[in-house]
Image 1 (cartoon, rainbow, N blue to C red):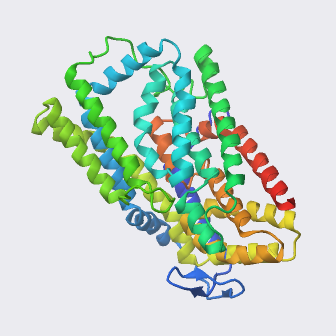
Image 2 (cartoon, one colour):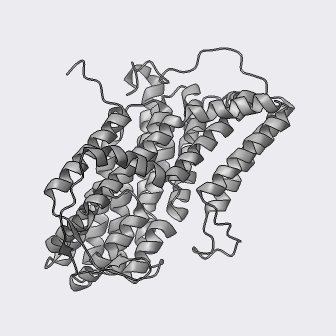
Image 3 (cartoon, rainbow, N blue to C red):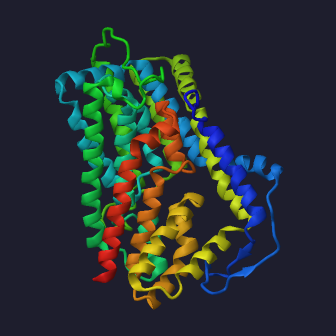
Length: 462
């Protein structure tokens, strides 16, 4: 065991593909009747169908089909890489980071709560998750330069936005869709979700800050110590000067990210009287492409130098794009084997006839494995809430609590599941193995789990 090395993200995901394919030979195939434009399943209509087992060829092709399904996200990642390649070529990031560290004068620890709160607000309001991929290559070097390790930078982004998504208050892509299928308004259950957001944010910030302080004081205690990768701080040397041109680059760099955040927030759906752009990955990819070209021209890189820097930056993130495609292949196999509805039907049978507290906690527990198998929160809401919400009425559970149980389980799983492209992609950008992330985060996941169980049990009683 001493010489054991954790497999790469690719091997882990391919192993999961094989396991899911094997499950299609054992789990009976079945489907629910669908209704409406959204084709939502109708409770009580499940029926078995002819088995559709997935073979070795399906396993191989699932990754390609998953990549086709996720091509918008993968291209977005490549455009972000190209954009960052141009920015890094100018030296503006190195100059800006050195300047910030000098200004903070040893107080870099306070970047953690500030940034985590900002990411959490994005997660809870508009489901900021895939969009955070653009921030990993920016913030990981900042924290490493400040004397921490890559895990701190990853945790700030992933746990900050993750805590917000876990306690989604008005997130239209999770809470909004689920509320619609449960027949309740987005505001139902809001006080409970706000309380959860406050507690979860506080727990996550405390957890990351405690680890960061330990690592800075005792670098040998870092969970990434001995990897020989980005765990070590950059070698010393004179940082580039923060010239007027580099200040312009940093201003344009900031403007691109601010435009991205504004463009994806659905202000109309959360009741804010501000024009909604409704951009998604194609438009965001165009934003980073144009941003890279403008920054190259503003700094005077020239056409050839700008193109080479953009292509080189995009090439650095090709591996992340491949991981995203492979992770989507799991859903492709489940749909091909028609076992998704069967697993949901088993949950429907297990929940029937239970008391209110037991019902709600079982719903929460059911959503944990479902969230691993179906990492899309909107897809999981569409598939399951139309079935579980009516069952909840018989158990005396309000639809808003079904929504909260769903989003809490989905958000919890998002933080650790290898089927989540953000988790595996973020770790790949930090060059941190998956097992090191699990060793770092498991205690916080257990805290989140126990807190959620407590919140749900008390709410069911009240």
